Amino acid sequence: AVVDDYFNKHFPKAIATANSAREQGGVPFTWMTHSWLVSAYRNCNSTKINRQGPAFPSDVTCPNASALAAFEAAVGRGDISWHAFPFNGEPELFTRELFDAALNLTFEQDALSGHAPRRTLSLRDVPGMTR
Image (cartoon, rainbow, N blue to C red):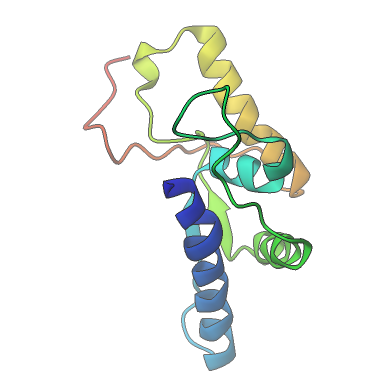
């Protein structure tokens, strides 16, 4: 699953790249992701993600304690970050309640990381907002 790629390839690679850049004294590296992936990673054992439907077990391989600790350390250093929306969405299609819930998912991850609530969202997959 794509989520497994994030958990087992992209997050570890981002951590390794940031560590390498720091060791070489070069330009700092920060990898931006989506807060829903951060939430799912942090809460993996209680998160159910699968392709077959809710009656089936989760397809996701959860991080072990050392992988989670490395991730939290990277977040604490600013090596891994996220924008103010859980994903690249189309907020103009959201009800106010759904929009607030999406922001709150991000703000919860910010609070867990000791970060001020984020104020900028990424809208890379959609050309603009109508409202």
